[in-house]
Image (tube, rainbow, N blue to C red; front, side, top):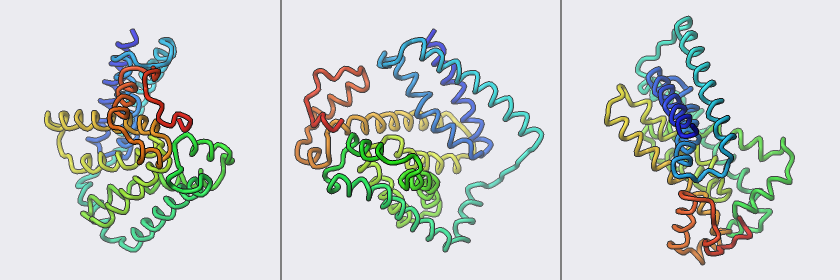
Length: 282
């Protein structure tokens, strides 16, 4: 029953995502995120039996997603019929829009750099340097902040600026792409938060989605390979946390131990045989 519901929700999420891509709707980013972080991961965990949640909880989650997908698609379909929006040559329009707003784009890149500094600066300062940062300690530092702290506000701005990477790729701007990639990579390196990798991944997906004119078999195969890569990246980030702080990761990095931790995430959540790589920072 659990596997059946997981397959149904996977199919529904995929179908809605494909429809949103065909319609060139901004909603495709939300459904791409849901597909990558829940639809595919949920199905993968159930197939390999690695989920740590009770079966009833998984069934309830799948039922909720399935019902939500039905209501969303029906509502979306009727709204689109009543209020049709035709978007032609989306890729060309975005490229033209970017070229006509060079000054605004420069300001946005400045804000992205500033946001990156504000998010990571507090963590690095509190932990005594970038080499002392780890996922566990970063969480502890941020947990002591108020919900409406500056870090929370900067985090919202960081997500809002995540599309700059996609815009830079569309514009074929090497400098803009490097700035965006480095900022997102640096935030991920300091925080080890797998959710913060989404702006980078979604920007790359958006680029191909805007360029895509028709969904062919090759498109589906490329999307499947991309999904596998995304899953691997997400689990690799989780395994990277086992290396503790950045200083320990550099000095004590062991490919076999890291691969063992990564394999443990794929197949089970039992880390009893995993070498103690600075577990106090987990």
